[in-house]
Image (tube, rainbow, N blue to C red; front, side, top):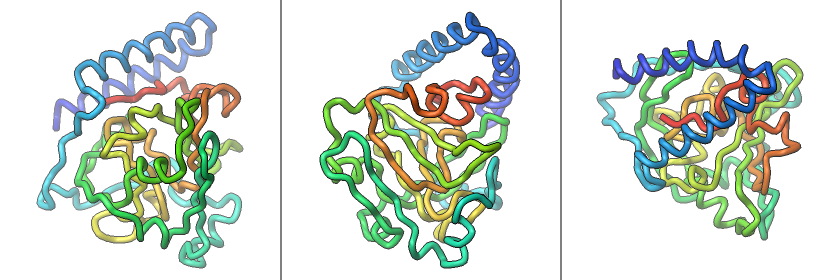
Amino acid sequence: MRRRNFLAGAGASLLAGCNRIAETDTGGALLRSADGWHRSVQRFFNPPGALVPEFTPADISPFFRGNGSTNPTNGDYQSHVAAGFSDWQLSVRGLVEHPLDFTLANIRALPQRTQITRHDCVEGWSAIGEWTGPQLSLLLDSAGILPAARFIVFRCADNLNGRDYYESVDLVDAFHPQTIVAHSLNGEALPIKNGAPLRMRIERQLGYKHAKYLTGIEAVASLEGIGDGKGGYWEDRSGYQWYAGI
């Protein structure tokens, strides 16, 4: 645990420096190259089907903090809160054969996976929680991913500094068995501060990849033209690595 926290803390310091480097064209190109190298090394030591460690109920942290956006006030999110998310919709669109829409009740009615895993934040903290939800692969298989799809983009209800939050992964992590659309934390409905009513769990990557307040899943051939084209809100704004493997 201390080693993982040290690495996450070191990563936070490194990213602070990377932000300044990324402001130059040469620096940006170097970081993109390093990102690809990092992903290749991670995939070498952690093959596509490798699982992250899972824990026991006795290991669950007594408090699981919220981070970043913890209670969106933009759009109609607060009206959904008042209605108990009864009208919440999750869409599956893009390069799919059958575009789909799921209500929260639909999501809960699907086959479920429960896993107790550790959340590692780039800021240096970690917490262990029990997450429940259907595997993302189930939704993607139901929609029928087209051969041209290379990435899965997650659309979110929260807007930070005038920009809608989004994230993305490649198909390896999208179809990983521990990648789930979570609606429950520690046996209870997902708290607002943790992304209610739906959030992603991308267990093999750092916390900023686990998109909260999930409204849409989109299969795409390229990340170009989405945000600033770097694959996520923090990647666009702060030079964070697109592949944040741990």
